[in-house]
Length: 239
Image (tube, rainbow, N blue to C red; front, side, top):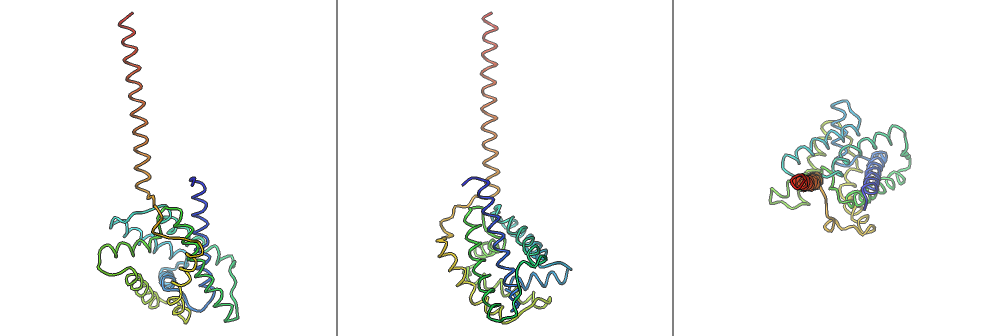
């Protein structure tokens, strides 16, 4: 897959991820655990949810980096773009708010499905996953706990902290916590996405590869210059 195509697909995935999150917000039935935390951080620091999403993502990515977790371009894009897209969608009122309870829940469920679908799209590019998934990986490598337990624990902490900072918790929060796994897995099955089969290429590896190719090219050029110089000297001696 060529670079431009991969970049486009990655950006589409990030936009759909933001669209899914915005749909769960505008369902107005309570926020998902991480969004509760982002809203709480935003309220405390005078930020939008999108800006708080970027800030939290950056902090988590920095922590992951300190623990030597691999960082890919999709990791950076997820940290930066999702928050920007959320604010773009919300400020321009591109996602409706329904009065009907049934329509609100339908939009919330569709939003969770889009989160799963978009994850399959942008992770499938092979440039890493989001910072929050990286944090789960960091803890899984350093504790005896299972990934499911770690993820649930992190989201529970985010939910509690966000609630005490003023984040909105409702019945929909509990519904999303229980059903998000189903909708994400459904999206993965439809996309025939298997995360274990993805071969990721991370930023440090890509820069290392570029450096090695440059060194090889420079080495070849130096070797050619040496051969030419030797040939010139030999010609002059014969003259």
